[in-house]
Amino acid sequence: MQGVKIYQEKLFSNFQLSDRVSKENFYRQLKSVLQLDFLYTKTARYYGTSGQKSVDPVVFFKLCLVGYLENIISDRKLIAHCSMRLDLLYFLDYNIDEPLP
Image (tube, rainbow, N blue to C red):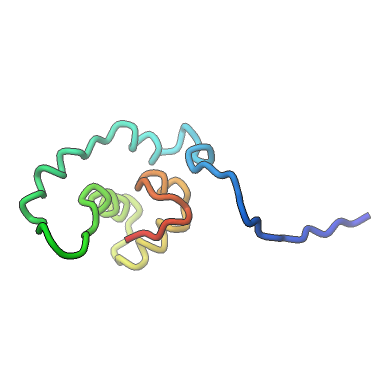
């Protein structure tokens, strides 16, 4: 007897991104060794104290690094590429329902 899979979205789901990215994944391993906290102090003088919040400098650097490693030169293609890959979302510290900058 042939079965038919019917897709229905869940209203609530229990999902952890860290469970879906394997331990051997390149970006997971890179995240564990890459310490970029020094960027906050190095770039603090370039940020104002009023107005809208800008992109986190660590996220910006990680996006540039992903663009270099994945050979993506367009910002729009980079954001589209990163939003479709769970390992890159984990590397950038974004959730699956959170929009990228």
